[in-house]
Length: 213
Image (tube, rainbow, N blue to C red; front, side, top):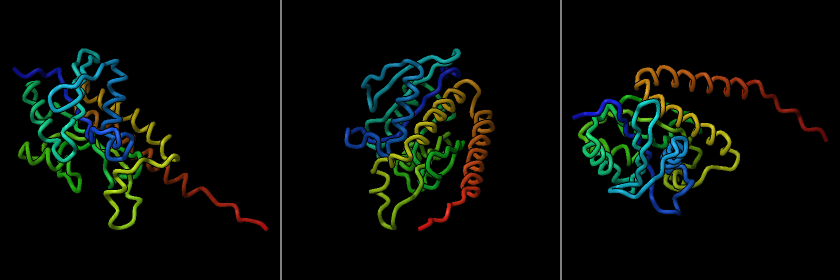
């Protein structure tokens, strides 16, 4: 029987230590932060590190797949079946090069683009009808260096904004668990758009002082 008060949060990433802190592993970072907020402990279970917590009467199961990114769908399918939920009760968190650094976007469904993890989930589930939280990492790399970029770490000057976006991502996951997808999208996508507008305006208003000799 389906438990309507349960959600599964999948933070995508690669399990080896050498990938910790990389752009491609931002899903792991959000999942870990969510576990910390819920005071939930991660344990190694099948296909991933798993933590369980409660929030306002809802059960939240957090999964960091240990299948490696390209096989993320195996973990997603297994845990959907194991926890007896529908695809509308899951949220997949993944990095997105098509969004500016630290910008967030919630989507109810869609394709995987160039993201191998999202594409494998679509392949395994048979469609892309599952909610996802896209975490912007930007595309500040020369042509042909996408792999090196996504497997690299954030620049030190980017970390403050990344940390704030991780906190907002945790808020989004908790809202998804309690308020549902549509209300969460309405609230947070609008906030993210406003934040981007404010950043753009601040950049436009910033005038460099001419150098004097």
